[in-house]
Length: 587
Ligand SMILES: Nc1ncnc2c1ncn2[C@@H]1O[C@H](COP(=O)(O)OP(=O)(O)OP(=O)(O)O)[C@@H](O)[C@H]1O
Image (cartoon, rainbow, N blue to C red; front, side, top):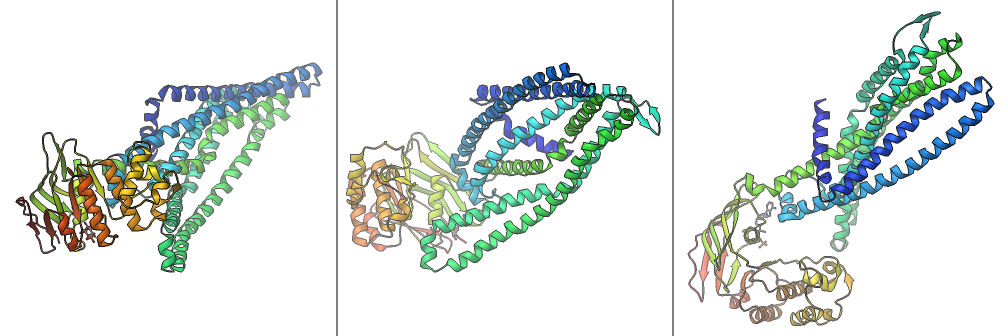
């Protein structure tokens, strides 16, 4: 019971915001229409139940006129039922897609906002496969919540409508046992109730493990799919390393989990279906067994008996909602748990700085340089990596950061960019300063080259001529004629070409602070030198901070900062007075 109320509270937390959102009127209107149609369908069931009594009694009494009239009544009821059923489904699907659209937008916003998607990866307890949660889980949540919610509503209304009928019929057809009438008020209702309680309890006992099994199944399926996507993304590397055999073993290994869990689901479902099918078959006969003695004793008519059987089956069906919907409920609960986990994980990643000691990012109004104050950059497990007590990067300065592999250069950049929360101290960034980070392997969205270059600016933010000029300037004249070509540029271009393209992006965006994390490492030295001269010429005001290992880079920087793993960052200044810095480092 505690579990059920906890699940319902989570469902409410996930579902309610849509009905309070900007799309609330459409959502509420569609929901009201669907609910009204569901209730109208129950009303038709009640009318058909009463019709059954008249129809079968007319048959028993060979009453032709009543028979013909009842046929026409049935036709009218049937047409109304069909129209309602069609539009109930249509409006339900309409509501589903609007709700899903809103929820997807909402989750995408939360997941992508403030580098949360990146921080979720950094945290060990992150929800697995967020892609699956935003796609399938959202879709299934909306679909199943409506199906189960409306099913439950319909069951409750059916129950109340038919219990009244069944109560009346219990009095009309008293229970006969061994030739005597037993006056038990509403005995048919009690019979249905006992039957349903027995069914629900046994169903839950047999089916409870399905909730967990379904949860695991969704996880294994998503893991398997994700690993297939990784193979597709890295197919060149795999082909070069002749890693296909290893991949097949690894993938089949993952798929093995899908299969093993599926066998668990199959065996549980088999037992559950055996029980629910028997339960439903027995329910067909059960009311006849109860009222047949009264019928054969000629206390009631055939119409009464048929109506009783139908009303009993409606009441019993409504009471057995959990029996019939158990599999969907088990699936639904696992979906709810997955979305809840996703929301929690997003929230905890977004609030990382608020809950734990974290690196603070401060935007200084009148400042003109970047200050690192008492900065300690740690690994996610808390191990200190780089420390900088007081370190300043002046406007228009050119700083080269060097140091051995793994000393924390890239992580220091991540901290300055505000996406690495682990550590303490403050990074002060001038207000309105435009920062741009260029990594060794720049990211280009799949699509038209022109849009890929200007990313993350909106397509069309720069004219074709501007993009063309930038491509020519960085030494990619061939690409300048292919601006409208669609492609997977990270896959199609050499790493050196991708790095040139990254620099073209920097030329277009004109950042105030440009951070180059080995962003020219794949180019030959003369080309690298040409590009640094180009940056100096086109972005004279920009502050450039580079990470690099080549000594040839020294000529393009005014200050050199070296991170060493022996516990200190040595600052070697040239040209300008080096700013006092006593950063220490590294495990
Ligand atoms: N997400 C992470 N989780 C755990 N450890 C990490 C994570 N990211 C980086 N590290 C660790 O932090 C250390 C510093 O990594 P970083 O990439 O900053 O080094 P680097 O100095 O830029 O190295 P390189 O010159 O090889 O690029 C490494 O030991 C790395 O394993």
